[in-house]
Image (cartoon, rainbow, N blue to C red; front, side, top):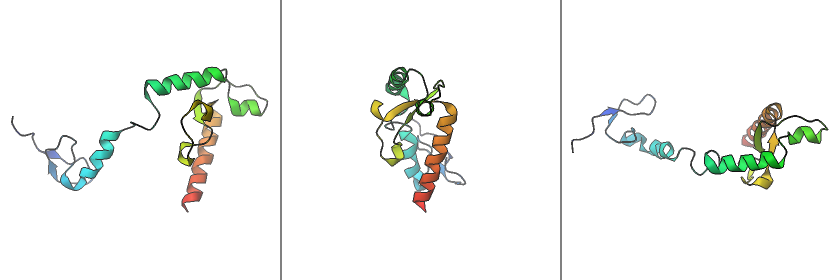
Length: 120
């Protein structure tokens, strides 16, 4: 079988050529591991997540739980972790709740702020 033609390395600003299937030169081969992993094993995407998401939405009657705690009724458009994965929360139904887009955005911004504070 003929050798694969050389192509530029996929790493930014790298000018090396490679024949590897993953597209990285020897200097950047460690980046290929992240490339091949993708989202696998992170608990989101795919049929299992869609089933769990549908189960949580049905359990919460398609209503935003944070809004319900404030005595408001709003339709939920997403499912979010109660305890974030970054803080050790598992992806199980008991740690998920239905949430509307404005609440999800506010919660995500708050989690990002807390993460920045922990990093400093």
